[in-house]
Image 1 (cartoon, one colour):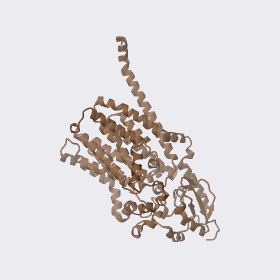
Image 2 (cartoon, rainbow, N blue to C red):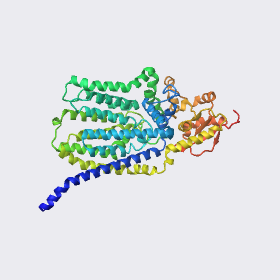
Image 3 (cartoon, one colour):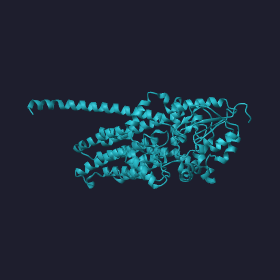
Length: 544
C-alpha cells in the first residue's frame, strides 16, 4: 500500500469511527422505540387471562372495601395498590385499560432499570442494548407472564434496581448511604408485589457482610448493612401493618390458600387443564422452555462466551478481585434460589419461572466487567450476533403488536369497555336494577360501574376452592360455595347473571337463574377466550 493511501486511510479513520458510532446509536435508539411500541401494541391487544380477575377488580373495589376482610385476595397487597394507582391515573381508559397501561409502565421501569444497571456495571453500551433487547423479546415475557395485568412482572423493576444499586455501590470503597437505603426500599417493594420476590433478599443480605471486600467488617456494618436494613424496614412497613392487624386472615390468604385448597383443587381438576405440571417432570419441561430455549438460551450462551473469554485469557479464580467474585456469587445465588423456588408451587405455571431471567443480564455485566479492553472487543461480536438473533426470535410477536397500533378500537381494553356499556344498558331493564351482577367474571360489570358480590369480586378463585377448604380456613375468607348460593341470592337478589365462561363452575348459578325466572337475553360483545357470555335477566314486572 502506498504512503498516500496509508495517509488517506489514517486520516479518515477517526471521522469514520465517529460517524459509525453515531449511526449505531441512532439505529439502536430507533430499533428500541419500535420494539417498545410493538410491546405496547401486543400488551393492549392481548386477550384476557383468568389471573387478571384477581388483580384488576381491586382498582374499583378499594376505597369502598378492604383487602382480605371484605373480599378475597390471595397475594400480598402492593400489587392491588399499584393497580389502584394506575386506575386513578388512567381512569378514562376503563378498568382493564388502566391496568394494562399500569403494566406497560412497569415494563418501562424494567427496561430502564436493566439498561441503566448493566451499563453502569459493565461500561458497555453494546451489552446494555443486548440486555434490554433480551428482556423485551423474551418469549416468557411476551406471553401471559408479561402481558396480563397480574403481579408477575410488577416486582421485577424493583428487584433489578434494588440489586443493581447494591452491586454498583459496593463496587466503591465508600458506598453512599442513601443509595443503599433506596436499594433496601426497592427490594422490599418487590417482595410486597409478590411473595416469591423475597428470594432476592437473602443473598444480598449475606453479601452485605462481605462487600466492599477491601474495608473492615465494622465499616461494612455501618455503611452497607445498616442502610439496607433501614430501607428494607421502610419498604415493608405496610406489610407489617397488615400482619400485625390480623395475622390469621393475612396469612390465610397469602400462604394458606397456596399450600392447601389451591393444590387440592388442581389435583382434583387436573383433567380440565391439559399438560398441567403437577409433578416434577412437568415442571422440568416448563423450566426448559423458559430458561434454555429461544431468547433465554441466547442470554445463557452470551454468559458462557464471556466466561470462556475470561478463562481463555489465563484468568484464575484466585487472581480475581474479591469484590468481583462476591458480586458474581451474589447474583448467581439469586439465580439459583429463584430458579429452585420456581419448582416449589404446585401446580407449576410458566409465570413461576420468570424471575431468574432478569438476573441473567446482571450476571453477564458482572462477568464482562472482569474483561480488559482487548478482551472486551472479542465479546462484542458475540453480543451483536445475540442482538440479531433475539430480534429475529421476538419479531413475530412484536411485529403483530406494531400492526395492532393502527386499530386501537380493537384493543382488548376497548372491547371490554364497550361490552361493559352493553351490559349496563341491559341491566337497566331488569326487575332488580340495583342488585349485584352474579358472575365469575367480574371485570364486565365493574367496567360498567355495576356492583358485584364480594364473594365473586375477584373471580372464581375463592368459589372454586370451597369444597376443598376446611371450615377453619374458610372462616377467614369472604367466600361462597355452590351450597351457599340460595341463601346468598335470597338475601341480596341479583340484578342479572353473566355466565358462559366456565360451564362446570357456573352450573349451580345457571340452575338458580333458571329456577328463579331469569331469562337469557341476546347481547353481543361479551365474548373472550373463555367463551361467549350470556346475560340472564328477570324482566321488569316479572314475578319475584
